[in-house]
Image 1 (cartoon, rainbow, N blue to C red):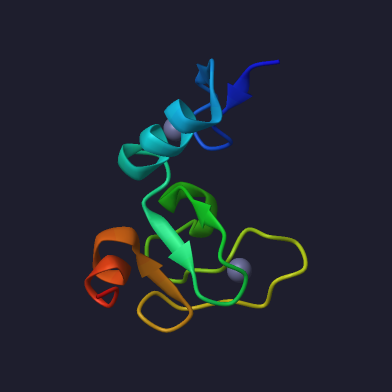
Image 2 (cartoon, rainbow, N blue to C red; image 1 turned 120 degrees about the vertical axis):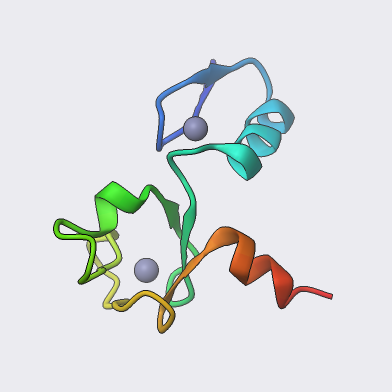
Length: 78
Ligand SMILES: [Zn+2]
Ligand SMILES: [Zn+2]
């Protein structure tokens, strides 16, 4: 069974390949602190100003508040 990137829909043969891809996926560059989900910017905003986590059960909102760009979030990891 292929492993499919939820953001760009590319398929990979192994979970490892998918994990490596998701680190670089252009369609998954935002990260929600509330639920830990990663998603494409276009899924989180309609006007480029107000951001909301696309996860249905998550209340995460606001770029720089609950939602971070992945490279920014990484800087906090030792
Ligand atoms: Zn992808
Ligand atoms: Zn969320």
